[in-house]
Length: 484
Ligand code: GLN
Image (cartoon, rainbow, N blue to C red):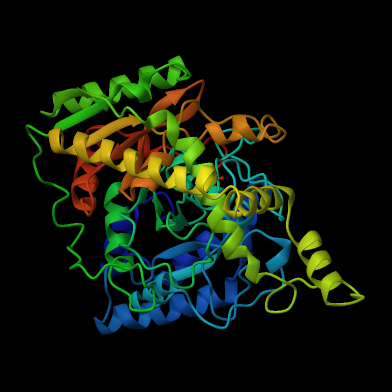
């Protein structure tokens, strides 16, 4: 059952080939057997999952089921889950049991999906390798010496190793697309505002967006159908009708204009990754697409602008973790000052502290104009580049990452090199656009992702473009050796 896509599992459940209880049990057994090698879950909720599966089976029997009813999923541990620990990968929230569900979680519950557990992640979603987690690094199932990417590394590894049928993720600067690419799965970051951020622990609020990690584009469409939509509890949620994302998957896209931004194919791109991406683009030509060379001239400014805006927002968002209102509190504080400083000093890891310091500095009175304001202006230039490009073409394609998965430990001591592993994904967040990564082949026996970027609210088109490619290729069906 575990080899099947969500779409096929849903058919199997409906046809009574198997029950949700059987399916859920299979995943729980696989987690027990394989997760010690990967560390992709922080918390597994076996009893809770089995109880949800039984309810799902009743709903299916009564004919009261939707397409996601009974499907076993994993939630990134950044989404609050009522009664279940929500750690955000941090010692700060190691003992935090959320008293409510995030909107995303609530919607999956209503749809009758099963939650297997909460996946490992970089601390407060800050990272590109899942090495900043308080719970230890996640391993990439394609080669356990390498990183799965981050920050949604646990979600990516669990889906790649088939320890969940699908998983949620969040993407502030690439945290869905980059790990999806490095783990050989499909990931979509929707338009900013398409999916509610309520109950999703904030890192950089103007960039954070919840999304999806699955085997196939069709599965992503099914999950997006549940997640997308207005939520009055999130002030940046957009009140726009939600289409059926599965409806246009089979549309013919002859004449589709694909833009290739020259800046994304320049120096720094690994040659093995480049040839895989070129082959994928040739496949699109065969499917009837037209290729257009384009330029996104301010691309080189995206990483520096992001590393001002994101830390600035995080320094403000993370001020709520003070040892009083949430989570970790130091032992025997002498006074209030001591309680604040030691709780934060002991509760946060080094990468989080680095970001808080950079952010507080960039926002300070004397430096605000030089850094924060400047970064905001660059952000506008970057969105304008995309606007212009998307006037000429329907979608933009590029490598998701400049290299395949790197080794655990290789970049931890060099934050700048680590930050550059998101060079191809960050601009999309600064502009608020939707972006996807789909498996396009292998280089050095490790997966390579093709990134597809679209216009605001054009998720249906991205999913259609991805799905058509998956009809003529089988990269997305491959399971890492040792996890079959
Ligand atoms: N790697 C980027 C960072 O560390 C992006 C993280 C994310 O998208 N959450 O900020």
